[in-house]
Amino acid sequence: MAFRNLIPSLVLVACFLPPVLGADQAEPSASKPASADAVGSWKWSYTAGDGAPLEARIVLRRVEGKLEGVARGADGLEVPLEQLSFATNQLRFELSRVFAGKKITTQYRGTITGDQLKGQVLMGKEGSGRSRDWEAVREKPAPPAQSP
Image 1: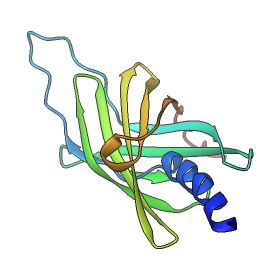
Image 2: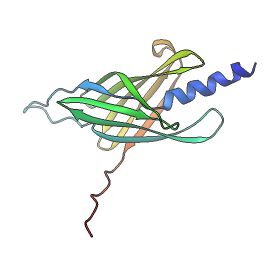
Image 3: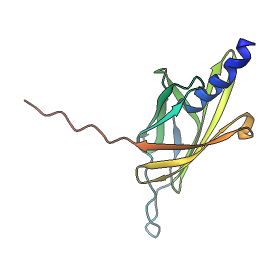
Image 4: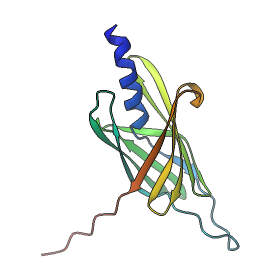
């Protein structure tokens, strides 16, 4: 009975622990306006199953023209993002975690506008389960250290 009560909390945590990103982004053409860039550290808050407030992040960067990144959850672990894609301001990825020996995959879908990322988190097999709104904010980079 206690294990059954633990599963909803684990699923909720899995949904909000960020992953590693890796996908191509098309170069904007001269005739179209440039789309938003996904590069940066994106942060959001959520409430765990036990009611505790938690924070999560995804950190995205470009390596040899490809978008890559990691998810950093409240547990401090970095998890790779799967099925990452970014085009026309639309960011999509999946995050898989293993809880109690079972793989749980959550889909994230969102639209980037400036430093805001808003969309849906889809939980359950192939995104057919529950969904909830998801909002993240791009963190400002730290200023460079000044010499004494």
